[in-house]
Amino acid sequence: RDATKETSFLRVGRSVRHQHTTLHIMALLHTEARMSKIPIEVPRYSRTRNSRPSHHMLPQRSNNTVSSTLSRRSHFRSGRGRRGMTGVSLGVKIEASSAALMPSIGSEPGSDERAYCGPSSTVIVGGGPSGLATAIALARRGWVNIEVFDRLPAQPSPESADWGNPHRSYNLGISGRGQSVLEELGAMERVDRWSARTLGRVDWSPGKEEPNITDFTKRKNYVARIIQRDRLTSCLMQEIVEKYSDQVTVEYDVECNHVQWLEQGGAKLTMTRNTADGGCQTFDVEAPFVVGADGARATVRDAMAAASSDVQVKKFEDTNCRVYKTMPLTLPKDWLSDVNYSARTKSDINMDGLPTKEGLVINVVLFRPNDKRVVDLKEGAEVKELFKQDFPQFADHITDEDYQKFAEKPISRLPIFSYCGPSLHYGNSSVLVGDAIHTVKPYFGLGVNSAFEDIKTLDTCLTDCKDDLSKALPLYSERRAGETKALVELSREFDNPGLMGFLTFVLPLIVDSITHKAAPWLFKPNALQCLQNKDWTFQKVRQMKLQDRILQVLIAAVIFGVVAKTIYVGTNVLIKTIVGA
Image 1: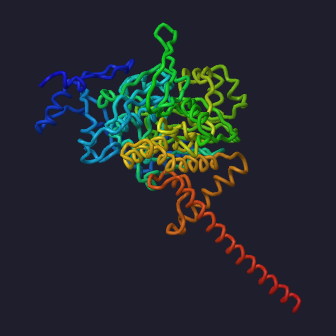
Image 2: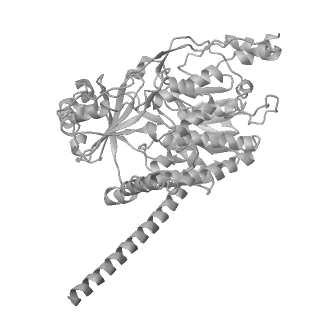
């Protein structure tokens, strides 16, 4: 066969910097096999399974309550064993038409021969999880010339020993919402390989020596996957390198500084590239279609908002401001390794930890920005003393080196609540996904999972409109803008301080638990559980909880009326009896 006709299948990514891209030698055979209907054996990763203990215990305390409690938690399912990669990938390129044979994102069964309808080129600003997942979704549709630019350096490969460094990245929880999208993208297997799992929660309440234990397996139809945020990015990058490198290129250390909309459609983006000698290089990129996936920096969104009054950003004042630092925890052998650890204190310094694939727990220590007990810490010994006072259950399982790093580490801030709408697109030229259209505090694992749902919705709209951007983008705004607003408003109700926080968060959780347990056919679970249900939209959750509140108020009013009438009648009878006597 004429080799010039096959060059596109042998070409690797043009600008995938800092990544070792494997030459796709097998792709030529794969192409020939599809044309001649010859079955071909494609090498895959081989894996080994290392089974985990099915049951663990926390270290004994003086009264043995914790140990005996956890020793009875035999109903915690151990889950599948952790996977180790022992094979070597040949980096086989999977064509978009081949990937599209799967009924998932970017696929239309029988669409291999349909004419290409995508734009001539696409620029994605932002190479985090949402940006790379968008690139994969578009590549699976058969789109070509997709360029991704990210301002940060490239991450190590998912199997790198660097991920054993707990200070490298914070953890994310991928719920059923995110997992279903990753499955459709064909990326969940790789993400699962480098994720830990959480089957429950061990939580210390303020002033309590013994923890409360929650078994998630009884109330969830999925097992949460926990992975470092940057490692998730690395997994998606590896998917692109191995499967879509002739359609997608990724360039790191490049920041988008300005977006100019062109009269003929599309945009010209001004970029700055960091060079190896410490300098920078400015250049322009033009594309008929731009995706803004650059998170809170939102250069693309700001340019859209300047050009269209329909693109509006609603930002809420942070009335419950907290900042954080991370602290790794080395679990003793007899502690549960597949749970979320948390501790809340009377001093208003709280800690929440999620496990990693390597067995460490990365804790996020939350505190007020003006709390001098944490802000003024300069030495590791001072940090250790604070932990012995507030978190004695963890203090002995943290190294002196990590205490010192905690003291030296800069303070990080949580995002504020914000959403974009009613339009999430600008003409036929651009669209927004991820944190560019909704930011929430990461307490309940809704950020990255809702970002993946943005991408699924965008893909569905493109399918419904046969890749006609003039129809698909307005449809995306129509379907997703209400969702982003509902997500942010619901999440914000959980974050009120003081008495308002009790009335809008704690009390509804208690009431919902009681009413759902008493009449599950009438009342839905609490809002947190509803938000984790991938089959319910955020708008539906908001509507269901409003209905629950109305019913709960009516029932409370009836009960109050009956009690009041009973007291009134009883009082009258008592008075008449006394007067008669």
